[in-house]
Amino acid sequence: MSVTAVALEGGGRAAIPVKLDVFTPMAEAWGLTTEEQMRLLGSPPRSTYFKWKKDGGALPRDTAERVSNLLAIWKSLEILFTDPARSEGWLRRPNDFFGGVSALETMLADGNFFDIARVRQYLDAQRGG
Image (cartoon, rainbow, N blue to C red; front, side, top):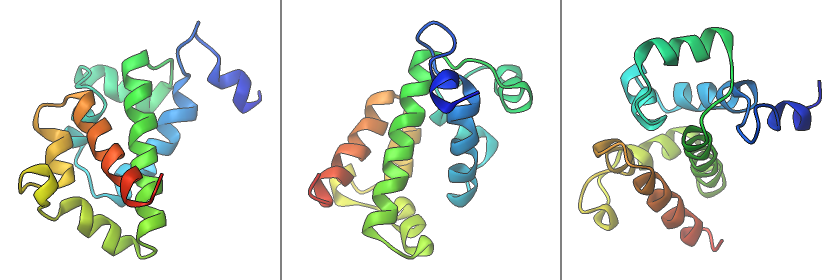
């Protein structure tokens, strides 16, 4: 099955193999706990999260959009910092733009999609995008 076919599966919802298979290595690179991963994904029930990881399935639109923005953040960090340790360091370092807390804390605080988008917008601006 092609990536396009998988991505369009589920009546407008992205199929999980396309998104979660890429989200997992990013989460591991960032050293995220299971709870942090679930929060960034929109706080699905624990059983749903583990079912997604084990069996796959279609992601709800909100979750797919979260993953898309998180992957854009990861890519921006790879562009800005060629060293993965510096990239993760930036993610966890307090930042004046985010009120003195880190980008990761900003994204996790309320579990709000708009906080993820805010971090993405900041990084897009930093790299001139």
